[in-house]
Image (cartoon, rainbow, N blue to C red; front, side, top):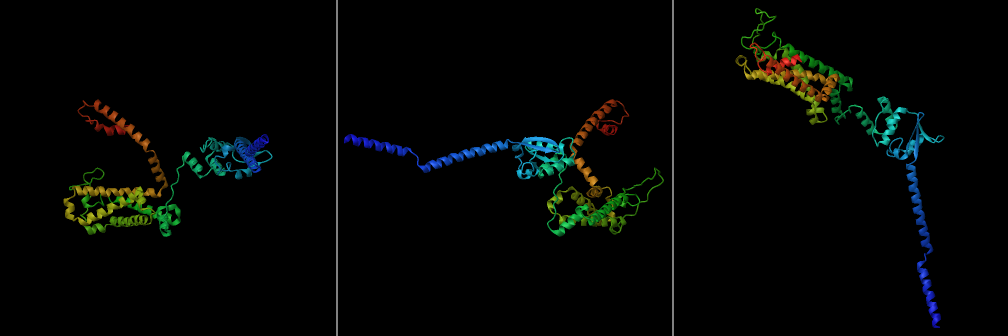
Length: 397
C-alpha cells in the first residue's frame, strides 16, 4: 500500500511539472503572431532598403542616365524626387522615365541631386535654357535664386511700399518714374527744374550779373587780356533789389519745387528712417539749404555792411555754402538709370580704385623725389622741395 501511494504521488508531481512547463493554446497563438510580425517587419525593411538601392533609368531626349532611387529621394518636393509627379513620365514598355528636355542641362540637374543641393550650370548651356530646366524640374525658388547669384545676377531688393493707398500712389508718382505716365511727367518736370537751377547757378557768376559784394575792393576784371577794358561794377544791391532780382525769382521757383518734392517724399515714404539713409534724399536736402542761408544773410545785411565786410571770413563761408548748390547736378542721377549703374559700378570697384590710387601715390613719391634731387643744386629750379614736385609727377604720369 505504501509503495502504491509513493507511485501515485510521483506521477502527480510529474504531471504537475509537465503542466507548468507546457504552453497554453492562447500563448502559442500569440507567440506565432509575434514571430510572424517580426518576420514581416524584417521583410518590409529589407524591401525598403532594396527599393532605395534600386536603380532608376532616366531618358532625356534619347540620352540615358542611371541613378539610385535614394539619390532622387533626397529632394521629395522636386519633380524627380516625388513618385507621384515622376510616375507621369514613366514608360512601362522600356521601364524608364522619359523627358523630352535639353540633354546637356540634365548633367547639372542630376549633379544637384548627387551633390546634395549644389547647382552648377554646364559651360555649353545658355543661362535662359538652364533656368527653364530648373523651373521644369521644380528644384524650387531657393535653387533658382542661388543659381542667379552664382551667375552674377544682382538680387532685386524688395520694394517697400506704403500701406495707405493714397500714400502709395504719391510714392510711386515721385519715386518710380517708370510706374505710370503721370510719374514720367513728374520726372520730366523735375529734370527741367534741375537743369534750369544749374543754368542759373552758372549764369549769375558772369561779371555782368555779379553782385557788388562779390568784388573785392579795387577789383577790375580784364577781358581778352586788355588793360583798357573792364567791366563796370554794378551798384550795391539792397535787400529789396535782391528779392526782385530775376535770378533770385527763378531760383525761388526752383526751390519751391524742390521743397515740395522733398516734403511729399518724406510724408508718404513707408519708412522715415530709411528716408534719411538714402544718399539721394540727403543731396536733395543739402542742395536746398544754401538758398535759405543766403536769403537770411541778404535780408540781415545792409549795404554798408557789405562794403565793410567784403573780405571777412563770414563772406568766405557764405560763398562756400552757396557752392553747395552745385550738388544739385547729382539730383539728375535719380532720373537716370545710366548714372545709377555708373554709381553702382564705382561702388563695387572701390577696392580696385583704391589699389590704383595707392600705386599712383607710390609713383608720385618716387618721381617727385627723383626730380627734386636731380635739380637740388639748380638755383632757378621750381622744385624747391619734394611736395612741390607732386603735381608735376601726377600730370607727367
